[in-house]
Amino acid sequence: SETTSATATTTAATTTQLLCQLLGMNCATPTDFNFSFRGFASRGGETDIHSHGFGVAFYEGQGLRCFHDSQPAAASPIASFLTKYPIKSLNMMAHIRYATQGTVSLANVHPFQREMWGIQWCFAHNGDVPLFKNGIAHITKFQEEERFHPVGDTDSEALFCSLLNALHAKFETLPSLPVLHDTLSGLCAGIVEKDSEEIIMNFLLTCGPHVQFVYSWPGARPGSKVWNGLYYTVREPPFKAAHLSDVDYAVNFADVTTEKDRVAVIATKPLTDDEIWVEFERGEMIMFDQGLPHLSAEACFSAELRGHGLESKVIPPPKIEEDLKRYHVEADHFAGLDI
Image (cartoon, rainbow, N blue to C red; front, side):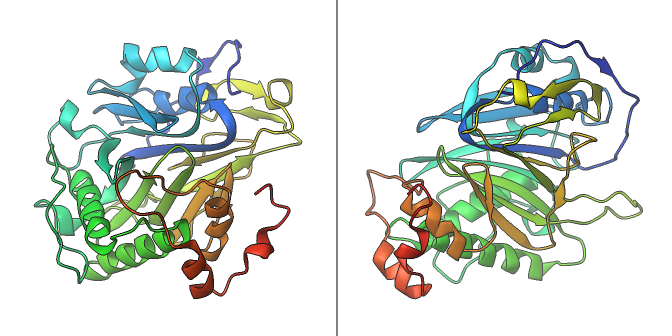
């Protein structure tokens, strides 16, 4: 649990001048996000400039519960409610917006969601992607049906829809998690190649209640020295106390967790000042499952064999045996990993 009843005061404004900010959490057991979201929400117009709306999405089984508001998170009654109500999930994401493209409106507030293959997909993005300034774009060699379209007018939503269009065109059966990791990595590399100098592309992508794909192509806006990237930390036994950097607020996780708990927290800027945060490398795609980072496609087989892959009632399941052979991986390699 991330819940505590301690009092809190706000620290001095940080003014990072980041485009938007992202928060993701991926957990081994159902966990509330109150602690991390408290610090994150304060950046939405109080300790930082991201005052053009916020959104939160988290899975409950195959369902996806979402909260969006075009008000600043620091002043929103919805955000205040979420910092106090201990909703628990294995997989969640949040976004605070600083508008660089698109109007300040509810339609442009992340996270965005779409149904594909009977699966709830969810996406939040930080950065500038010139390829999608005018809407969706074809990003594969496959004949892409323009099945998914933006509702708002941000490059972020156009990027999300274009990724889904590409996946829908490529696969006639569900991809396994290793194949999805490889495919997303390839799509991102192709997007970056088209404009590697100006592009900043950091995103969170979920495709069900268990796993979260996170990609980072960091950078700084023209004329700015502020770095737009991604960081993550993993909280696991033995748990210790953590203190938010934006709010004078701390939790001793040893008092509110069990040996089975583990949480990965992903953020645009580290949320705490006393934990170790790992910065994503440029062009790195990491899949998180059960609060652990999986750094390669091959590593994703553990989550797939655990039953945490994509689930659909409308298209055939992944061809796991073929994928194991393709990646030269033996299923026995994962024996003893709680699979």
